[in-house]
Length: 593
Ligand SMILES: Cc1cc2nc3c(=O)[nH]c(=O)nc-3n(C[C@H](O)[C@H](O)[C@H](O)COP(=O)(O)OP(=O)(O)OC[C@H]3O[C@@H](n4cnc5c(N)ncnc54)[C@H](O)[C@@H]3O)c2cc1C
Ligand SMILES: *[C@@H]1O[C@H](CO)[C@@H](O)[C@H](O)[C@H]1NC(C)=O
Ligand SMILES: *[C@@H]1O[C@H](CO)[C@@H](O)[C@H](O)[C@H]1NC(C)=O
Ligand SMILES: *[C@@H]1O[C@H](CO)[C@@H](O)[C@H](O)[C@H]1NC(C)=O
Ligand SMILES: *[C@@H]1O[C@H](CO)[C@@H](O)[C@H](O)[C@H]1NC(C)=O
Ligand SMILES: *[C@@H]1O[C@H](CO)[C@@H](O)[C@H](O)[C@H]1NC(C)=O
Ligand SMILES: *[C@@H]1O[C@H](CO)[C@@H](O)[C@H](O)[C@H]1NC(C)=O
Image 1 (cartoon, rainbow, N blue to C red):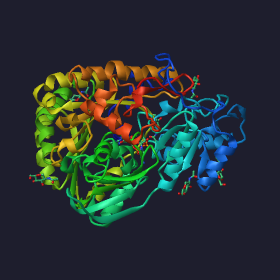
Image 2: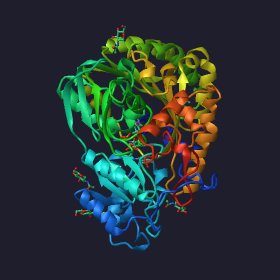
Image 3: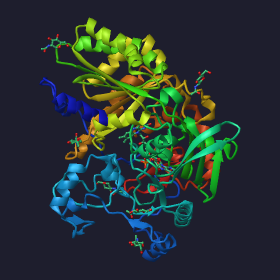
Image 4: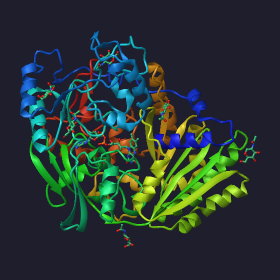
């Protein structure tokens, strides 16, 4: 959604309106906080070792692990170290204001964090411990970053990590791209396994009782854009995300995964044929419809970071196709607000369902500046067909006397449409707290006025986006994947963001709480017993087991017990995580179960 925000900003800059998205900053909040469950529980069970404990592995023990790994152990260095005169409480030899200035300029790009073995894109999970936007005299410490990270190249490294963590009672974290909004790829006092550099890719002929055909096999660290490009070079497409840099085999697909081909083929998790992974007891297993099928089911949407460390993923590949895109921009100039929202209502009720039913994936955003469709992506359709599907909306806008911009284009391949969209996009991350809610189609089409009232409440204060799809067109039977089946009946997932203020950590906490306790509840009221999308949930989501996993939670918990009986893996809001809590030192302790 943040990418869209910047696209909007870029467009608005070129428009003759005084309204600026900068005024958004007044509204909201910010994130961050001491994200711990401090004070809510007493440590009742075993706790993980942390540095300073007598049981924490000695320097020699870590050196021995490093030797076993062939030198792949990295001691974490906060990436903002050049911004501070002290580092870990000592004079800082790498203090460098020029480097710091460059880092600040690049801070919001995913690439800044992708290259790091420890930096989370969701700033809240750094514990504000080495903040590049604070004065040089502010301390720079490790905070909640991993202590050590294994720069893994294969399953043998994963096995060493699992055995070491178990033997020494050290918290283990799995990191890939570091995109996770819930902080699941970060952990205080942890040993982290970093799967990013496992980049193998091949097209294979796959055959089992459920599928015969072409498939793409990717290593754990392959990014969506790398998979798109490789598939395209073979005349194929695979189902990936809207964001180019999330890991196809990582949290993205393990948590469901929606993207531009979702209304044609379904979720990314629906396409999985096989996973290879190392379990919590250090076994290398292959899981598929015919082997370890319980774990196969769990990894298809039950969430990353908790069942095992995935080394490869095999997904269905489909023939490439022409793809069309369309965009609409409608500005709220302060006097046309009612008309803008009546246009939003008729778009949601009359235009959106037929768009997604025809195979389009539609991303729209609403904010104080107005409303945008940015864009509708329609694999398989010509731009004339897409224009026809959009016409009820554009005619409606004309009838309401609203000024708007419309554009559409057709591309010969999926990749060319995707890359054209990237040209105008900036994937700015690390600047918003994020939370979401799934909106049932029935609510959107039968009780549109109630829904739009809630959307207006949110969008008059901050930025929100709706990722819209028809997830039934892929012909997947919902029981064969662990994705919460509620998502199949939804027309879109609403994502709401409140801005992070890097210079005011308490204000950022207030902004986060506004998301949790005010903005999202306006949608929860309309969707009692509803659900959220795992990969874009609010990390403070109340009753997260039900909201994220629905009725699958118990079965997922049992499967985790079977493959990770010692709870080697823990990730915030992941299956099994409710039995553990971080205390005020960031130490992870068993509290239940
Ligand atoms: C800018 C941005 C855009 C996004 N766009 C989309 C989108 O279009 N569609 C969508 O569905 N989601 C989107 N997301 C959400 C995205 O799916 C999640 O952030 C997801 O967790 C990313 O997975 P990752 O592995 O790349 O990230 P990481 O943060 O590295 O990992 C995420 C989770 O997966 C686990 N994990 C990672 N690798 C492995 C592995 N090899 N084995 C086991 N567990 C592993 C981690 O432990 C963690 O729990 C977006 C997020 C951002 C920040
Ligand atoms: C691990 O070994 C490599 C190669 O000897 C070395 O460069 C690296 O600094 C070591 N890691 C740690 C954490 O000491
Ligand atoms: C990213 O967002 C931040 C905060 O909104 C903003 O200050 C910065 O300019 C943005 N960066 C880019 C490259 O758009
Ligand atoms: C996080 O920050 C708080 C406040 O500065 C501090 O008390 C706590 O120890 C930090 N946690 C970690 C894991 O560094
Ligand atoms: C991690 O390993 C890869 C090779 O697998 C290497 O290219 C990369 O530089 C390493 N990263 C770090 C930070 O050591
Ligand atoms: C606001 O926009 C509407 C059309 O969208 C236009 O009719 C109206 O004159 C505009 N008002 C101002 C103050 O620009
Ligand atoms: C789903 O089934 C319908 C009807 O049988 C068929 O037309 C369509 O191509 C199928 N879609 C996919 C993605 O297999």
